[in-house]
Length: 204
Image 1 (cartoon, rainbow, N blue to C red):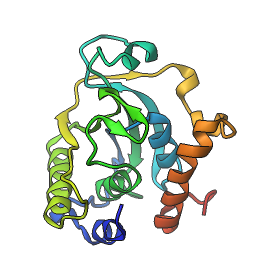
Image 2 (image 1 turned 60 degrees about the horizontal axis):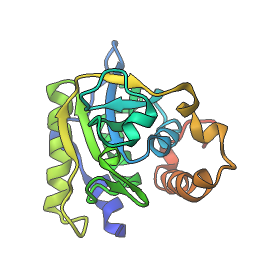
Image 3 (image 1 turned 90 degrees about the vertical axis):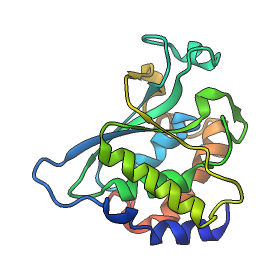
Image 4 (image 1 turned 45 degrees about the vertical axis):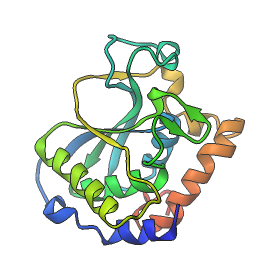
């Protein structure tokens, strides 16, 4: 990706959709940006994020297994459900990270991971999330930040199915696994470099 991607992302204000301080401060957003191991590992280090759960959304089969989703026949995407503190971070920051650590211009693919389960998608739970997602996508396309148009889908949230236990905290539990070293670690390093002032204190 071009360096202008990062510059543009930090310039975006989401046209007024940034969060304000609130007493009731927890909210969830569900996103898919390729393998959920990668996305989970990144967001677990973002300050303000309380939990990140790997799972599946957007399909037509109830309670799908990982093996079923991998066939590409259930319609699900690999996603993470992020719970964050709106007094610490906001949709602006969540989406900045999302569009930095994956390629939103490749249809049903992230690197060597190919299939509809690896599609780029944002599942919104309310109008604020929908408008914020549409806004940042429109701004990025208008600025021609990427060489190709963004293909990220913005769809209403319906159901989230938690993945099997061994998929949770996968990177933290399997750092020496080849996929973790070759695919996940570079994404984390990029995130930590770009968002160094947004890391949880233990990572700062």
